[in-house]
Length: 222
Ligand SMILES: NC(=O)c1ccc[n+]([C@@H]2O[C@H](COP(=O)([O-])OP(=O)(O)OC[C@H]3O[C@@H](n4cnc5c(N)ncnc54)[C@H](OP(=O)(O)O)[C@@H]3O)[C@@H](O)[C@H]2O)c1
Image (tube, rainbow, N blue to C red; front, side, top):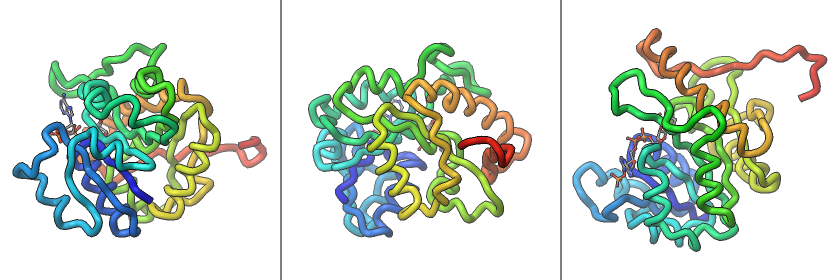
């Protein structure tokens, strides 16, 4: 599949490397779209190139949003609203505000989420929030953490969520039952806020190799 990845940080790198290894064609979008220092990694991947946000979005049949939270809405504007029409936008970003240092706060209130802001900005896109509650190494290599652990998903379009589940199981190696669909896109309010807890756990463990595991009474309908 042709996949556009917006952002060039750690998350974009990890996701691009895994998708390229799995045989997808990748275009990574950055603000300048230029081969500046620190972005040479793109050239080392099979079937991958660096471009502007706009070109990466036009290219992708599916798009991953891996931009720093504060820059997401501006990045989507640069990418061009029309280029997202009817496409799945996998939103991995978090609305973290580091302006007062560590630990960060959220720049959205508890009655909104960055994922909902994205869906409102791009009404014709199918936004699927997922992967934002764990470190990138585990996102693309879940079995590197022993035992069961979960991913949380939210989105308004059921078919889009199913398609993203297929990619996460087939290409990233997530067991189907590990992916918990929490419902419509407003469920991202909870999964984005969970990142505040993630940061505190990371501070305690001084290591990012951990994840959430939800233990449910076996009699409960899932
Ligand atoms: N690190 C993780 O393991 C992890 C885990 C879960 C979720 N997330 C979320 O995933 C997203 C990416 O995280 P990351 O750690 O890979 O990198 P990051 O440092 O949070 O983001 C870097 C990317 O954001 C882009 N960006 C665009 N507009 C920006 C602006 N106004 N200010 C700052 N950056 C801007 C940069 O673009 P250019 O390429 O043009 O410089 C750069 O590629 C974030 O939203 C983060 O919260 C991260």
